[in-house]
Structures are given as structure tokens and as C-alpha cells.
Image (cartoon, rainbow, N blue to C red; front, side, top):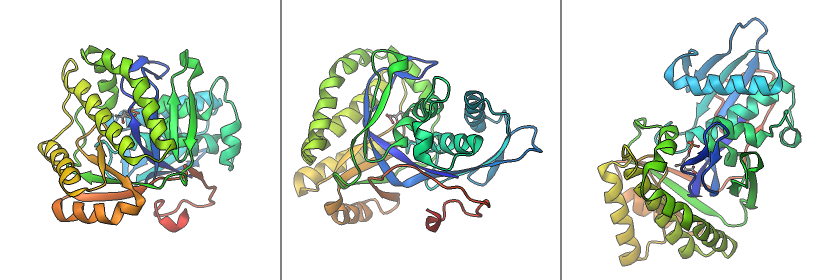
Length: 346
Ligand code: PMV
């Protein structure tokens, strides 16, 4: 049974250089979260002819649209481990799925860890990490499920580098979770499932006239983000976060066909936050993934103040409060818990 956190990208992965190997068009940097997570149990059953799947307490069959990525990934993992064992897979998120809160990152990371560990009867995450599976590492396997999932395998602040070729990609921790206590408050403006998946978006990105200029400018922005993290320079980090998120959404909105993930409240929120910062000194910046919801980033020391402001002004919306997390966990249990998310289990 594995618990993997979601992550929020400071430098976004958007667009692929090669589809089949999930080779990203650019390097990305993220902050691993703590409470926004997926827990997945993989229970072997020799009587099964195929895997069974339950997501957030709903049963799914192979062939269901929502389940196809999961079954595809299970097949990929079985092939990599040369395993014929079939599993009952039970998975639950601590937050709404598929609306730009990176459920595919935590979901695919948890599925990769839980299933791989169960196939190999390995209970130690560190040992799993160190092993090679044919030509794959655990990072490669998670990445093949969903690109951003590879960053959820590590805690703190994480960099995924594309490297000189698809087989030379690397994922590494830049700074630990303790290095800089930052908070992420996700303001859920719309929790409906997004209509265009990020897989479709990655492919359409190349059609935007802004995509190549974005790629050319990203190395400099990534350096600034790393400098800001190293020096705990919050206003530099914040400026880069906002510019980066707006740039990615400009690419989306000018893709062919165009993709608009925002709802009306998204732009209202951005205007409001910027005004609060300039006029009232609110120490917070925004970033947005492939969805309409806003991640408000602030330093942990300012969290209560920022949270209070958000609660007062955006009282009709759910706010998920999180902080930097230390990465995934693996547990071997002799039973399947009724509530895999129960915090005391972790
Ligand atoms: O991992 P995917 O294919 O769901 O793509 C993630 C894309 C963004 O969340 C928008 C950016 C990122 O780097 O997480």
C-alpha cells in the first residue's frame, strides 16, 4: 500500500519532445505537497483473470474511459516486472480529481509504487528505488504513467531534467522539504472534471506560435527559480511563478485548437490577488496547472494571514491547505484498510 503526494510545478512541463517515451520538451521544477495525496492498495489474488479497480470507492472495468490509463499502466508495470499476478487495486484521493490539482501525478506515482512493490514482494521503498527493472527505473515507470508523476517520487523541491536524449532523463531533489517551509492553498473555483486532458494539451502545445519562444526563454526562468529557492527569495520566486503560469496558459489559449482551462472566476481571482498584494501587501503569489483552480503560494509564516484573507473574500469556495512534503511512503499490511486515507495509518 503506497501513499504518494501530489506536486505543484513552479516551472511547468508542457509539451513533449517524444510521445512514446514521455520525453518532455523542457525541464521542470516542482514542490512536492504533503496532504494532497493518493493512497493505493494492490492486493494480489491468484483467482483473478484480470485486475480489478476501485477509484474513490467506485468500481471500474477495463475499457471504462476513466480507467483506461490505469489498466494501461498496470499492463506496462506487469511487463516491466515480468509479472503475471493479478491484483485488486483500490485507490483514493484526498482531493477532487482531474481538475488541475495534479491527481495524475499522485495517482500514477502511488499506483507505480504499490503495484511494483506488490509484484516484487518488496516492502522497502528505498530498495525499490535503487533497483533497475530491465532498462527502467522507478522514476521512468512513474513517468510513463504520467509525466508529472515522476516528480512525486521525491520530497521537497524537485527538478526533472530532459537530458540529451529520452533515455537520459533525470529526476533529482534540489532542496529538502525542511529547507524552505512554503504553503500552497488551492482555491477550488470549479471542481468539474476538465474537458481536455493534459495528454491532449501536450500535443496541441506545438501548434501555438508562443511555444518555441517559451522554450527558448525557459532555461533562464528555471535558473531564476533555482536562485530564488536557494536564497529563499520569496518575491523573486513569486514573480517567476506568476509569469510562468500565465505563459503556459497563453500557450494553451493560442494552441490549435485553443484550450481554455480557466473559468470566469479564475481571472477575477488573479486580478484580486495582485491588487491585494500591491495595495495591502498580501505576501502571496499564484500559479495554475492545467485547470481553472488557483494555487496560492506563500511562506508558512504568513499562512494564517493569507488563509484568513482568502476565507473572507472567497467564502463560497473550498480551499485546500497544504505545505511542502517529504515524498511517498510504502507500507505492507496484512489487511486492506476500510479507509486507506485515514491519517493515523500514515
Ligand atoms: O503529467 P501530466 O501529463 O498530467 O502533465 C502535467 C502538466 C502540468 O500539470 C500542467 C504541469 C506540470 O509540470 O505539472
